[in-house]
Amino acid sequence: MSNEADHGPRFAWTVTLAAEIMTVSQLFRFRFDEDYLREIEYPDKSLGWSTESASPAVWVFIFLLVAGFINLLPVRQYGELEYIFGVLKLLFISGLIFFNVVLSALQRVPHDSHFWTWNKPYGFSSKGFVLYINSDNKPTQIIEGDAGRFIALWTAVTSVLFSLIGFETIALSGPENKDLEKHETIKIATKKLTIRITVLYTFATFAGGLNVPYDDPYLAQANWSSIRGGQNSLFILAAVRNHLHGWPNFFNGVFIFSATTSGINSLYNSSRILHALAGVPEAWPLWAQSWRRRLERTTSRGVPLATVTVSWLFGLLVFLTVQADSALVSAYPT
Amino acid sequence: MKLTTNSATLKERHVTMMAFSACIGFGLFLQSGIVIYVAGPGLTVIAFLFACSVMWAIVGCLGEMSALFPIQGPLFEFPARFIDEAVGYATGWTSW
Image 1 (cartoon, one colour):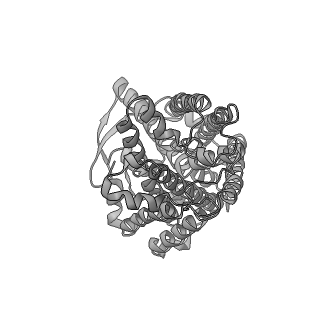
Image 2 (cartoon, chains in turn orange, green):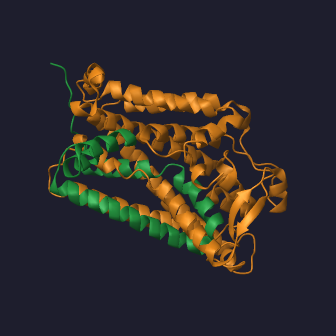
Image 3 (spheres, helix red, strand yellow):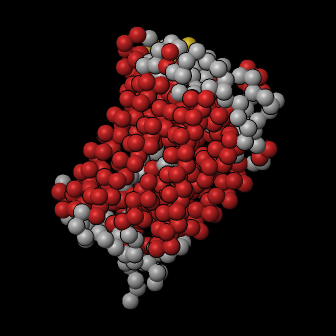
């Protein structure tokens, strides 16, 4: 599977909702391999959640309902709630950066130097770009040298761009923005957003990269497996490799929270795009005009109930992925 | 008379945090590890800076345009107004 396929399909907001809920259901399958734990000398024999035996359909059902209900709130309350969620996430990522810097400084598991992950073999490229993986998850074709390094950087930038999707929310929430007409509100908002995202993302990856070597088997697994859980995350690996208790579980919990709130926002975005489209008769064929008028309606508190429902129905696509072998279905569109 | 308008009650701080919250899903936490495997830790920092500069350009343009024309639903209104109506509606439908 290619690298683009691995973060799920990301071409429309309705499908993004499905992708986020699917991620939540996969995060509940948090379990480390016991051989891996022995190899890095983790003090406990096993690490993981007992929820892995439950069917993912349970989590999909619960979290879809949560996303739907929060989107039915009047937009002022919804905004207030999302504000609190956003602040919590911001604080968490700041804490994560601090946590990883402290881990690197303490060196609970001694290494040659504080930059050991950069020294071995070198920090500015991996050994080569893996082109093809056979059915045993073993790389068979690797591009090395300058071409490999260039392709690696190119792939890296493409993958990062996938995780930056979401900033259009500033534009999408225009009709509900009280200060829209005020001078340069959106301009200031975009500036704040880019600075926050750039600083937090860059520092978080830098600090995490100090504690986990790039050839960790779980990072490799995240690249070609369609099932990824908390054990594939850089930050959980950093905590586990430093033999910490509790933190991996806590991080996995916050990741679930984070993916859920992002899913809630995806539903908000898709419903508002559909509502804005419903306001334009020319964008619809003649036979769909009665549907359009139905979708255009809002409640007295300004919530477009019909578009929220229609967009939410696309979230049911996640049920396609609840069987292990059908995870391929979700990766197909990209 | 049926209501068709949203209620404009959000403030700037809500909008900023909603966009921030939409950006950060599991993306950062998972993608950073994948990128480190592909490119190595040093190149990852460069890749993140590079990708963020691309985003900065897009969002900066969007912000400037919205400051100039404060209209509702700018994501497909701008292409519809400045290129062609069909392009605008296609943008709207594909991003839904």
